Amino acid sequence: MQRNLRIFSFLLIAALVLACAPTLVPASVPAPTFDPNSINTAIVLTAGAAATQTALMMPPSLTPTVTMLPSKTPAPTESPTPTFIFILSTPTVPSSTPTLDTSDSGAQFACRVDSKTPPDDTVFARGADFDAHWLVTNIGKNAWDSNNADYRYNSGDKFHKAPIYDLNKSVSPGRQTDIVVDMKAPDSAGTYTTTWKITSGKNTFCSMKLTIIVK
Image (cartoon, rainbow, N blue to C red; front, side, top):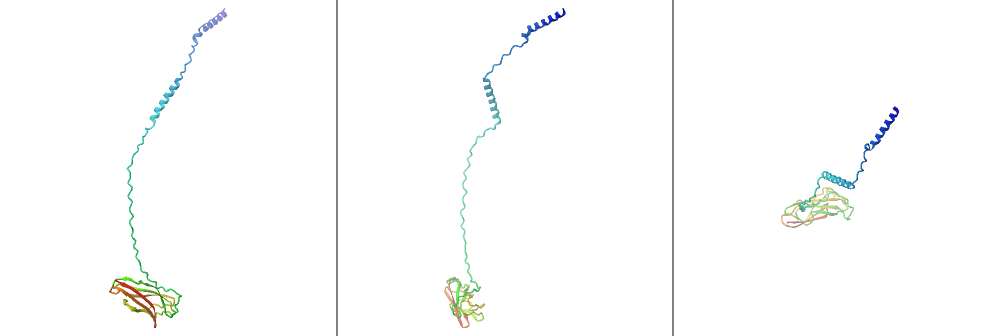
């Protein structure tokens, strides 16, 4: 009896469960519909937001302006200043250092005048003091012994201070010496010529002439 009661109860419960099953199972949810334009709308909104953010982050654009600089006037160039160079001639005094000359005139006493200072026709002021120099070479066979040789005024105008000078040293054949005479220009304007010669014993030779102009 009890067994049958349990079976009956089980069946009753099963029947109740089966009867209530449609109400317990949730109704099927309808599938959502997809709008294809929603993607374009999202893209447009996203792009607009991005453009707004970019505009806020970017610094304002600068419009270049051209500023005209004033034209520069070229600096004036300096004109070159002429430079004057004055060249003063210095009279060359013949060297008194004797040099050997192997030329021979064949005479016992002879000379060769190599140079003279001042040159002929040099202009002097009236009464001016100056020295006459002759550089001469002994081209004779005999030496000019300073013990008995000298040079002296021979002819012409007299504008020397002393008429005779001793040789300051002996001059061997082929050697040079400097003949120096202290002179003074005449007090009157004009052209003046003087002649000097060397003497050794009774021998007179080596004619040395000078012409000056006095103004």
